[in-house]
Image 1 (cartoon, rainbow, N blue to C red):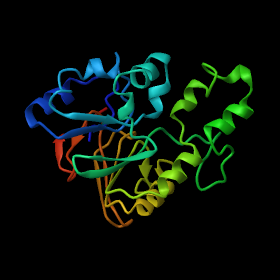
Image 2: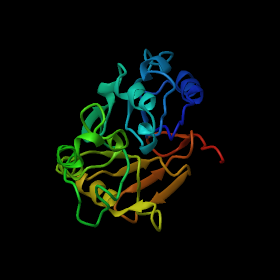
Image 3: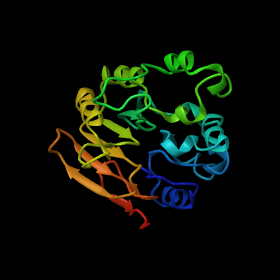
Image 4: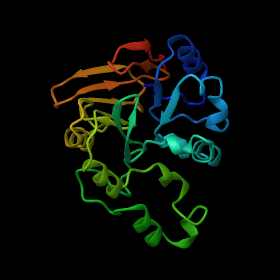
Length: 224
């Protein structure tokens, strides 16, 4: 599990070449400097690479297009469960934005289609969602995922182990609904091991950090 890269991937490439993992999952805020398949070309023959978007992956058209327009666009885990190296992994990328939905409050918009219909033509980007909201969590995606089953949940947002405004009870509920035993998140740039008090083992992956599937540190997160 690779924490927020924010444009730098050398550490991931080096770790993959040494450890030869069956798969790598990026936890958002990648801000790839070129199409993702080009950035990861040195390791795509030796490992399977998957990802979820982070809130900063729609800060610019380039960041968006380098993910969604890359040859690895089909490896976006957001809103689905995929069996990767024998493990069912569910993904929920992006961030909570109060103008759409701030759980546990009632949502203002249920879906991307609802938002597009109501936001006005002048607010649309390329005829659809505004760029920023291409990384927003919409309730319909969340609730469809909630009906599935997975061993592991990867998110950009943190579960409620984080106190205050940073932790999301909705992530807790999703993990339990999926019957996931482990969750991994990025976003907060801090290495954390939360224990299992919420019904699953939770792990935060720090800035440019890497954890294995058991939560063991491969590369510790960087200090900011």
